[in-house]
Length: 234
Image: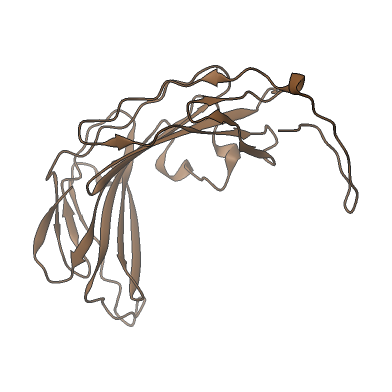
């Protein structure tokens, strides 16, 4: 990473870097995934500039990163780890400014904790997690070339309700689409963060400061069949 380079439109600049310009790598301690999950062999670490206009990968190895020389106030790093199991996955992102961040996975979904009726507009039961930092849930139904349907539900909006049905918006007075048929995929994600659900905008790096975290536990199926009856996830 090269900081504080100023190049006007159509111009150019040159820089000479030597091995001595590199700072020593910092080791990362990877979290242990839950039973039945396999973690990726390392963490991805990214640098985010204080101006939110520059950044990039800074891994020195799968389990270490190389600090950016000239790192200043407002600059940040983001460390990402992932783990997967049959019909389930875990994602964790930690924003930090120095040293080795504390990385952890969210709790996985309990086997069979979610119930879904395989309809064109399914109802999901089991949205009752009580994790610290739980902000809400995201439902995603995909039937290729027919429908891609996402619903984002905040914990406060759900209140004491633990089920939700994707609304039928196929009426001509609404979206006017044909309800899908056939098969596709469906997933339910629990979203945990120290920030509110609708402040989690990954297209805006300025939304994240050192100490922020984002964790997602997903249960899914790639064998979702319209009219096939109720199924349990994961």
